[in-house]
Image 1 (cartoon, protein in one colour):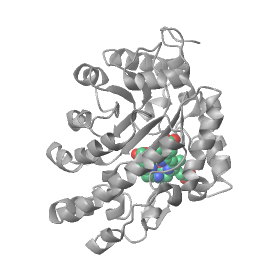
Image 2 (image 1 turned 45 degrees about the horizontal axis):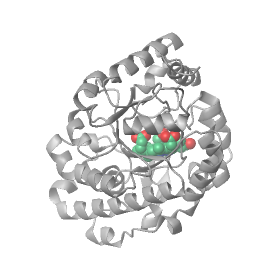
Image 3 (image 1 turned 120 degrees about the vertical axis):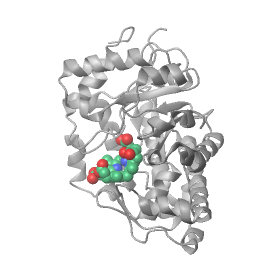
Image 4 (image 1 turned 90 degrees about the horizontal axis):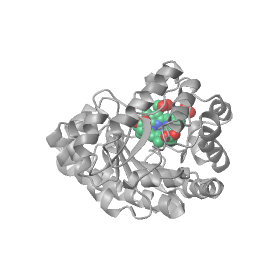
Amino acid sequence: VTALSPTERLLRACRGEPVDRPPVWLMRQAGRYLPAYRRVREQVSFAELCRDVDRAVEVSLQPLDEVGSEAVILFSDIFTPVPGMGVDVDFRPGPVIAEPIRSAAQVERLRVPDPRESVPFVLEIVRALRGDLAAREIPLLGFAGAPFTLAAYLVEGAGSRSFSTWKRMLWREPALARDLLARLTDLTVGYLNAQIEAGAQAVQLFDTWAGMLAPAEYREWVLPTHREIAAKVDRAAAPLILYVNDGSHVLEEAVESGADVLSLDWRVDLAEAARRFGARVSLQGNLDPCALAAPPETIERLVRELAAAAAPARGHILNLGHGCLPDTPVEGVRAFTAAARALAGGAP
Ligand code: CP3
């Protein structure tokens, strides 16, 4: 395959078509580890930044020049569409819910808003980014939080080690949990399709906390939400990438979602996943973000090893196993994207 544009390379890898080399981007590639991001954040809060179209566009684009990423992900948060349901969310820095959702009355009050009305600024950011990126042939990704992860925060009220309030609801009040997940699934479908209509060329669903369930419970509570989203999102227009953190024990279930790409955390043996599932789904990942602290030569070797491990899969997107952390060295991220570009067959 001759040299492809970054957009063709990413979309072909998602769909399992031949590519010259794996595409590369990083989860949480715009964030506090970047000095340019911190300069913008000195002027506005994180919540303001997510609604400020010009600044959100600016920080979304920073990873292209600052660290050599080859895709842009909309700068926002998985909680951005949640206030439109009638729930107050604050960032300190993680999401904090003023009145955690615990009762049937609260769940019944949750609206599923039209994103054009509740988050017009998100769609403006997407349109502005796509306008900027089209000439450079850089792909634009949209994203949403998955219902299970959103519900975990909404019920718990904030991040937690065990999310036991939420997990207890699954056992004690299954009908209530199901109603909450159904509303969040509707929200997510509408939100992703609105981003696709506004110009997102691929979309990623982040299920950060779904891996806390045993396989049987994952099958009952998580898989149906993923399947419904995969069925209702316009995947002909934009392939769907599913990220399940800490999901080594539920890979078969994650593949059954019907997503085009499975994004793996670093606990998963990529070679084994490529052999077992690589004919059915493309893979994304999966370097431990902390490995970006290694010397550049080590990062280059790790990238070559990831690419070789994923070779049996129909497609592979180089990425981390979870997001960049605030203490991630910028040079490590640059070494990661440079190593991807240097892979055999690739343009320099
Ligand atoms: O990937 C990207 O570059 C796009 C932007 C993005 C952010 N959050 C920006 C952000 C994405 C895709 C997310 C997703 C997100 N947000 C998830 C799922 C993925 C994951 O990382 O597990 C979750 C669970 C959240 C909720 C959230 N938002 C937490 C727990 C935190 C605090 C922890 C942290 O990293 O600060 C946030 C805040 C947040 N979201 C920041 C950024 C850049 C930091 C805000 C700041 O202080 O500047």
